[in-house]
Every structure is written in structure tokens, then in C-alpha cells.
Length: 301
Image 1 (cartoon, rainbow, N blue to C red):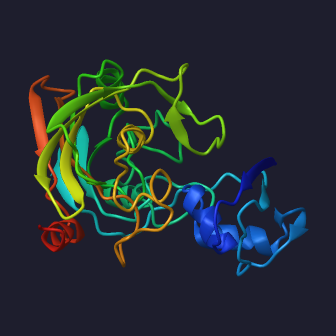
Image 2 (image 1 turned 90 degrees about the horizontal axis):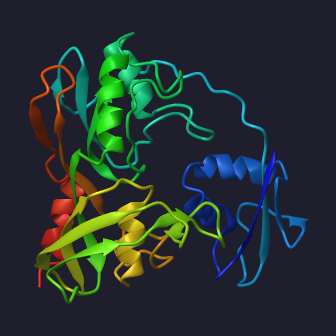
């Protein structure tokens, strides 16, 4: 059992607040915890509809996880490339990469198990077969999955050496003054909220290169090239400059200013690496999702 304490910053429904800061858990899972009285506000059980007041102390009790079993599910996949060693996927918004508490089904792994049958590397265990790297639930774009353990080892080595080419597109709040730049700041767990990442002195080395693609109405459309690949790296780095990603209610404004937009506006556009068998450089690009394209049109100055 794990206990976490938070302090509310503004008026908001308790279930909505917790599901926004605890990204790995679904809102329905949070609501179940509330029903089971595993969520206390000022030491008192509440209902999911409870409206928090600034300063409320929230105690979240996470029960010991039961090991979910990843099962094959017939979920459509947007496959950009596939051979006997790897499969390249264009992940949609809202899809979790692998099963976890509150997200036992409907994940990318569930879909891969149906598509690839037994042909997925087993290095990362039964819950994350084939998964070499991840992107957040609401981040879209290109991911490489390994079918064999050998391919997995080789690509994991390239990730460790920071030799994989990764480019993301994003929309950030405000108008960036510099047309391009580099953010070199270590990232680790936040000392005030262990579910969030932050720039901390003893964090892991993290470098993001960014470049302005166009200026929008109150926002900036940028591309970011990762030199390293830390958890929430782009989201944390851009927020540290005072330009959080549009839609990111964890590192930016707690309420998204765009109606209907859910989650950060971040897309893994390009992924390039040495093929684990041929050792030749290959590169894949995932087109901007429809919601992203429409957003850029709406925000044109």
C-alpha cells in the first residue's frame, strides 16, 4: 500500500483533480478508490463529486497492485513499417502504451499481442513485451516495438548512447523570443510532488534542442529534438522557460484554454536509428494527427 498527500490549489472536483495529476490511473479507477474510502480530504472520506477548496489536504491511498495479465485485443493499429525484427507504430492520442493499474485493457501492448501473436521481445516482461521506449498517453506519434530479444538489446543500447534521432512537434503557450535554442537542465522527481518530474540539481542529464516553426495567436508552434530521453522531458523543459505545452494541465495552466482539447499538444514526428539487423540508418515519420492540424488552422494569426 502506498500513501500520497497533495494540497489543492483551486476549486475542482476531487476525481478530476486526482486523475489529472496521477496520469497512470484512469478517472474510473480514481472514482473506485474514492468509493472504497481510499481518498480522504482533510482526513474525511468524500464523494467523487466533492469540490476541493484551496488548501485542502488530500490523502490518496493506493492499494497493493495485483499483477494484471496482458491479453490480446483486436484493436486497430496504424503501422508505418514492419519486418521480422521490428514494428513501427503511429500511436493515437489517449492510448496508454502498456497495462497498469486502472489501464488493464485497450493499451498498445494489448493490440500488439493480437497483431504479433508470440513475436514480441520478452526482455521487459509480460506486461511490456516489445516495448523499448514509451510516450505519454496523450502524446501521439511514432514508436518502435521489438519482436526479438536481440533487436531489443541493440535498440536499447542505441537509446542509452543517445544515438537515436527523435523529433517532436509541439504547441507552447506564449511567443518564444528566440527562434531556436537549447535547454540543458537535469530532470528528476519533483521534491514537492513525486508524481511529477522537475528540474532538480541531482537529476539526470537532459538536453532538448528547440526551433520555432511558426508563430500563432498567443502560442508558438515548435519542433524539439531530443538529445536525451527523460520522462516528460519536453514538457518539463518548455515549462521551465515559461512556455508550457498547450493542453498540459500538469506542467501548465490547470485548465486548458481550448475547448475540447485533452492532454498536451505533443507529437512524436520523426524516429531514426540503425536497423538492428542491417545496421543501416532508417527513419520514419508520423504525420500530424487531425486534431493537431485543425488546431494549427484555428490558431493562425
